[in-house]
Image (cartoon, rainbow, N blue to C red):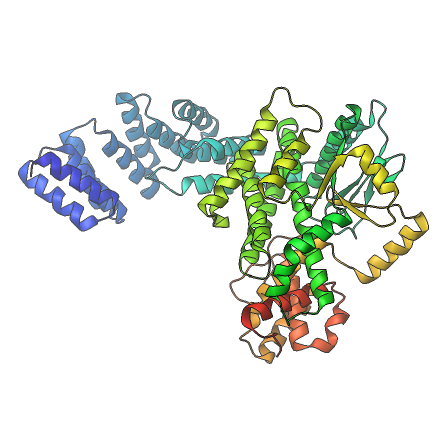
Length: 610
């Protein structure tokens, strides 16, 4: 075997981390021809990766004696001296030597900038990072270094912007596979910092003022900490009033983004109205009956003799409402969020954090739905495909790829990608007309074979339909009714006193409680009682439902839970261990608990009791 073949084999072994094999070939090459510089450089790399810095430096010095212009030997010497030995002056000299021979070497420039940062020359380092990006805008290290440089001097917006650029443009490099992850961590960190420093209500009020002009009805912002969602639009035309109302729950984290989101929906409605092209998506009694016929028999078969007819009908209704809300909101929300991203850059930090939280909720929901056989597979699949579509949009905006977390099949991914590509085609169409976003809704419905469970009509036809109703109608994610003010007040008092959750939240809590039941199914009653008591103690300081993480108790080790997850454990542990006191907790999760027990029985063949 010739020397070049042995060198190739040694390099392949190094890449596979087969240290002994690589060292064997390299030692043989040294014996055959001791003048090849790269042999010593590779031996130095092996020693470096084993943490044997002095041995590595000896090999690298020999490599440089054989060839003073060995670029990788010079860079590795600089790395050892700078990162391991903390000899910044000597490290700097090696990187400068690389640039003397190879002026446009991105790695050497990047490492030199990192050393300059360590020396306090931050502004000069930033200039070099900029040069690196011009040379290679896919190199992740320069984005991360530049973000850290901006952060160190308090320029958090610049840090956010460059981290966002790096998240979207950079690619993984084999020599340092963790850098892109660090960029994403930096991006989220800078978003948190900016959110704390930014008064987003100024943005909200500016958008509000712009939408009230040109003869449009006034907009009233109503704070409601009892609201179970972040924000909710009540469009004047659908409520037969002279103003638009946006109710918002300012006690929830990052609520300002959802307020801007609802204003985005209002902008679309106003645009369509002015063009006399208004459309509405809603669910009628006929749609409900169709859903029941289409999926009810399947669920009755799955839950045969395990649930009463009344409870089964309620479960079917909840599932219908949940999937309809998703079918209505998923395609339209793509337009709203893209509009916010492109027209209000100041909103990007809070938008990132909110969409990231929604991604985590979607992932948990998909995993929970996949774990039960009681839900119709077409519903489970449609939910998953739409969440994949939303995740592709999130990746497009912020460069964060969470698609693998959904564990999609090839067919599911391709269908989600098709929905997303169709949205992109609409968004980028130069001749996009008012209300054409509803054509995308129709495309979603047809692709997912669900066009028969919702209704899309002209807005005037919907208003006429609405005027004939004497009960709430689900439309575009909200409830619209024709109750008198007195009736509304009675309804509000009833809802507050009973704290009935909305269908989507009830469905989510069912999944969280099911997971809690599965966690506790092999525990003794004293063990579950201990969980109940520890959460009760924790609850003395309040548990925020919308909080995405930060809750833990000793009895459930190594689990960082969000607010709703902790409340699921709270309610279900009391129902199991201290059932006579559970309803005194005041938690509105009885229906969700009952549904979770039904699903548990379907999966394990028995209802969990202690």
